[in-house]
Image (cartoon, rainbow, N blue to C red; front, side, top):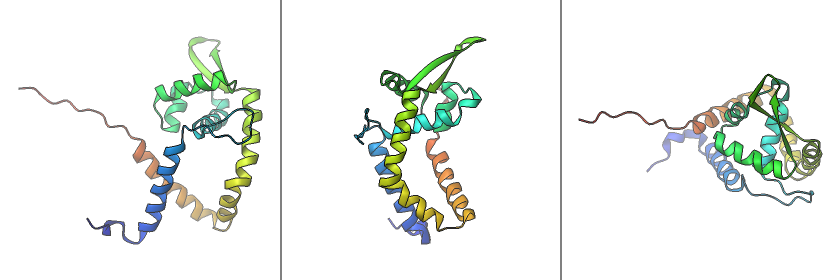
Length: 164
């Protein structure tokens, strides 16, 4: 089968898919970065998403949807992170069914240490290269990646078929 449909974008799409595959392969793998606790990419990403939306008091299901992961996966990871002391759960005072999660002080400390390590080992070079391109190009690239992420996070919904 020919890959002509990729046109001049073959190299970019190939690298994007290689990144996605590599990231997926290690997404739930806890890495020893010299911190008190091993962290996986999924845990770090969840802490970032939770901290980013703290002022909105979002329910766990809403945060899971923002991340593009199933609610069950989010809940399972929250339980695991609570056992590590990274996350705390709270009830809304006016609705005991609504559970809000927050990154604990300990989780914030580990997250800050994690950031220092990954800036030196990976993201420092990524940021330097991003600084070399105009902001509008970075915005376009971000939009392209967002389209791919949105499309790949859609779950197939079964349709009804009439039985004769």
